Image (cartoon, rainbow, N blue to C red; front, top):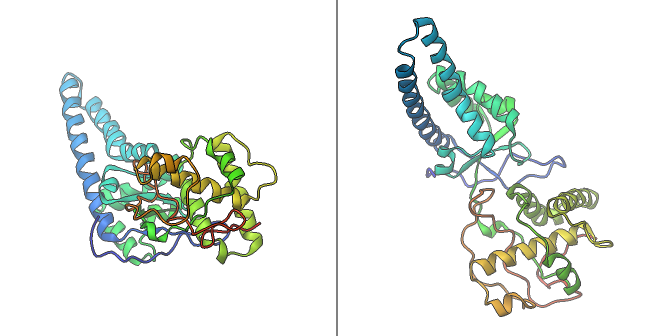
Length: 309
C-alpha cells in the first residue's frame, strides 16, 4: 500500500444516508495498482499474440488482423472485466496495494459494474495513457475516474483498524445457544462489514432508521445461514449476538482463548490485542468487534453494545 495517504473516512453512504467506514483510495495507490495490472495484462497479451501469430502463419493478412483484434478485445479489455467480476472488485494490482472496487453503498460489484469500468478504461487508461483517468481522479472528491462515476463504484482501502470496531457484549445464554450452531461460512465479508458498521453507528441513528436497517440485515443474515431469526428476538439483538458469536469463533481459531474457556460462558473483559483486520478482503475475514464488556446486567455487558429493541 502506498504511503502518505490520508486516514480520513468519507464518501460512501447507505440507502439510509449513513456514512460507511470505507476509506477511498488515493491516486498514488490506485496508480500503483493500475501499473501492476497493466504489466500483467500486457505480458499475457504478448504471450497470447505470439501463440496466435505462430498458429495463424498460414492464414491471409485479413484473417490474422481479425484474430488479432479479437485477442485484443479478449485480453486487455475483457480480461480485467472478467477478473473484477469473479473477484468482486479485486484485481492482482489492487490485491497487492490493499484496494478493492465496491459499489457506492459499500456492496460488492457485479458484472455490469465491471463492464462499464472496463469499457471506459479503454479510453481513460489505454488510449490516453492514463491521462484522462488521472485528471478525473484529481478533480473528483472521492478520487473516482469517469468509469467509476458511470458504474457507480468506488475504489477503497480494504484494511480497517480493529480500533474502529464496536464493542460487543456477550448475549444472554438462551440467545447465545440459538446462534451457537449457525453456519456462518456462507455470509460474505460485505455483509459482515454492513453489520459491523450498523452496530458501530446504531446509537447515532434515528430509532426508525435503525430498526429498518437492523431488520434488513437480520433477514439477509437469516437467508445466508438458512436459519430464520428466532421469534420474539429484536433484529438488533440478533445482529449483536451473531456478531459476537463470529468474533469468538475467530478468536478461538486464532488461539486467543483456551478451548475450555472458549466453549463455555466467556467472562467479561477484553482478550488482548487483535491483529489488524482486512476490512472486506476475502482471504482474511474482518474482525467484527473489539473486546467484551465487563460484567452482565440482564444478559448485556455493562460497557458493551446494547441494541435497540
